[in-house]
Length: 147
Image 1: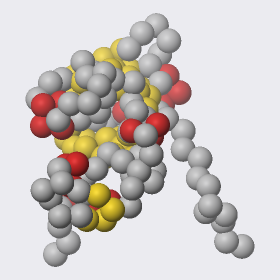
Image 2: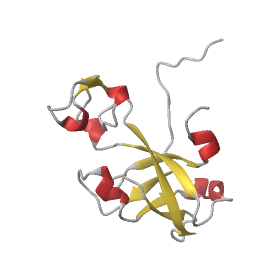
Image 3: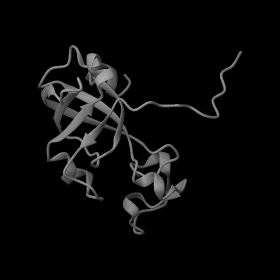
Image 4: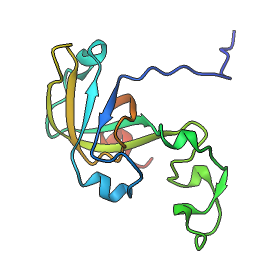
């Protein structure tokens, strides 16, 4: 029997703490450390990750979701750029408002007495409060271009 794919449920594993509460260019956001606060029930999933490792972080563009999206747009919201399909851009205004960024772990520490963990990273372009839905180790073998 085929699964019903008309709706998919995703459970956040944590959230981002960042100095950026409003829009800022991704390049600027990536220059500043951010923290990924991993909820206690998912903290054991960090086993094997170490400072210096690169990770791919999947997160929800929670502020963009309130504005909607277009399937065709000017990249960078610049009318000088020719219109493209949203899947051919890095726009945050997407049907599912999911983003992926490669970041480098600087530190992993206890978040609080509740048993969660905090992963401090550099290179993440997520706004403060963004729900994190997954963390994966980044490997050039798997994440690079196909041969």
